[in-house]
Image 1: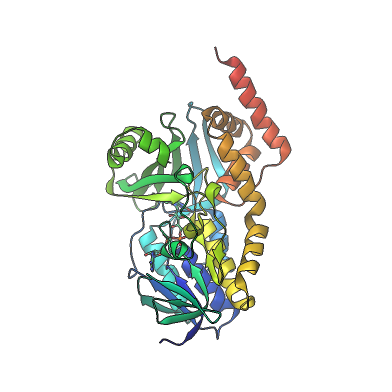
Image 2: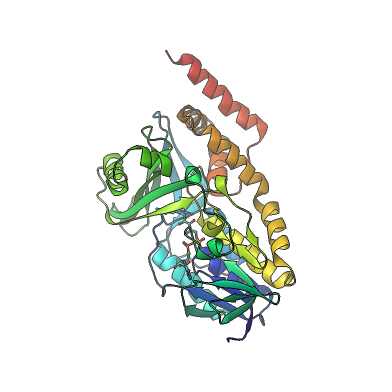
Length: 382
Ligand SMILES: Cc1cc2nc3c(=O)[nH]c(=O)nc-3n(C[C@H](O)[C@H](O)[C@H](O)COP(=O)(O)OP(=O)(O)OC[C@H]3O[C@@H](n4cnc5c(N)ncnc54)[C@H](O)[C@@H]3O)c2cc1C
């Protein structure tokens, strides 16, 4: 039997590394073990888009310069399902960093802070004498399950998988773009809505490109998933032929479960923390990982209630906002109105970015402006 660990983190993506980094930041003498089934660097199907909010989390974790060598992206263009268009400058820049690089840097930072990193796939979990035992020989006071969208630990603690209606699926690839291309593009599609393609230039002459849609809508086509996802991507971004295509599903926060059980806290995708409007999950992963790591060392006797409370404080209102908006957004007309309004008013554009990529909420007057535009558009229809 291994020694007793203060914290064992399962999964070395952004959520897991954030948990490990935070625990050591607050308690440098804490014994923290990070387990991942893969060695780093490793690839992860993702749009690689890191919002300004995610970068703030990096600063909180004590690694503010982690992605400073990547070009900031200030321009964002969005085309709505009905063809409304906004192209504007964001208040704070986003970054695009391949996950092969980003995740490995985070794991390295955790290792440098004294976290022990091991390659190991977790398969079993048991509670014993107020501790958690993983695979029979790793004993922990607390566990952060940050093992992603197919979380094994989530299943082992009896938390059901995210229902299909709250699950999206997306494919991403890489395409060549002019070096000067520095605008992020989101092109929404009415057919199979909600669905959109993206192009996120990295700054090195390539862009991460991809296409995502909800799982039930994909199934409703009756066609093989690969054919639909690859086909729609090629159709929506014909000028950007993609290579290294890789797909994965996204458990959306509209179907989020309780965030753990006993001494196990779920973070990031394992907690279904992906924005249902945009598919953004890195910011939530860093944030929830940080809060779980914090609870593990600051409320070591009973970390889950502390984690749940802080998660609610940080994201509660925002998640309720995105729950409501994602229901409204099932009607493409609502998104047309929102984009139309954003094209006319910079503060609405900024707010949409904050709700889609950060922890924003919607003040009533702005919600009213979008609703009025929606009604006007509806009234104009023949
Ligand atoms: C195609 C696509 C595009 C996306 N685009 C964006 C985007 O542009 N911006 C954005 O913010 N979000 C995006 N997302 C969402 C984002 O990828 C996730 O929200 C994010 O990766 C969540 O991080 P995580 O640490 O929770 O999980 P992950 O990054 O998935 O990390 C989980 C880790 O756990 C490990 N693991 C799994 N099972 C075990 C096990 N049993 N034992 C040990 N280790 C295990 C894995 O090897 C992995 O390293 C996208 C998702 C997809 C699929």
